[in-house]
Amino acid sequence: MIILFGLAGSGKGTQGKALSEIFGWRWISVGQVLRETGEYAEIMNRGELVEDDDVNRLMGMQIEKTEAEGYDVILDGYPRDEYQAEWFMDKFAEKIDGAILLEVPKEELYERLALRGRDDDMSKESIDRRFEIAEQNFYSIFNLLEAKNIEIRKVNGVGSVEEVTNRLVDVVKEMVPGARVQTADVNGGEIERSYGE
Image (cartoon, rainbow, N blue to C red; front, side, top):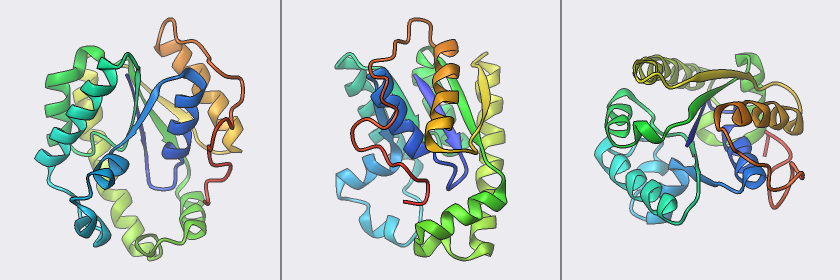
């Protein structure tokens, strides 16, 4: 199991999908899991966070279901905070191969978020606040991962989608012995070609 971390606009969703295609794994996004339940649309549309216990329950069920089907997992957007991370580590620490932080300068993140054009992305003040909270959470989560001797790698997230994907593929191969590329097509399936989409 690989966990992808990154600030909003870093491309972790795009890259998570790409890696799942390339390695034949399953990409599990917390946002997607929550949306598919149909229970949290109102909360998410207001830009609010779903309760940690609900997130943990749903993500735990999804991870267990995916592993029972014989797939490795790429997590995107989970765990989001220290509480979620503690619960997650208690259940799944032995299955985590590593964590990857996609690093992108904030000036580029502002540009990418402006291209996305979502209402919650548009105010620089709100973006900065989101970044600040996320970075505090990363620090707490990484401390928990390090305490379990789980490797954390930082990967440069600047460049074309393909360039960043290639960097990530190299790191995943180092983290997961036996990981095999299933397709050479970085843009297989419906993988987005732009971080602005």
